[in-house]
Image (cartoon, rainbow, N blue to C red; front, side):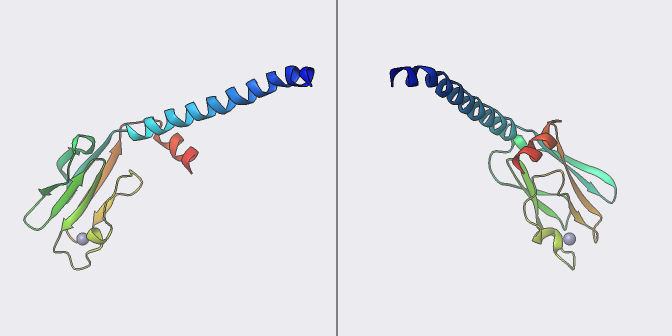
Length: 129
Ligand SMILES: [Zn+2]
């Protein structure tokens, strides 16, 4: 029995350290994903009117883009809260925090483009599924 434990102790140590390494890499991926920097560029009729660093926002804040359009920003995300467009799709879309999900309002020519400063973002997305 003693020899069994002795020969298999190494296995346990190897398995244990592999699990530990997996956990550590998960934590690292998590923290990288959480610290990614997201910026929003707001275009109106093709013209860049405002750039917002969404990571610097700590609380929800309303910003007027034009007489008819207001957006709400919070940490890492942006949404349209007021817009007199007929469809209202831009408002219905809610918060966007991903460069893959821009907010577009064709009626006003509003285009909110999200830019991630972290170049390894796409890799993380693949890992996270
Ligand atoms: Zn709209």
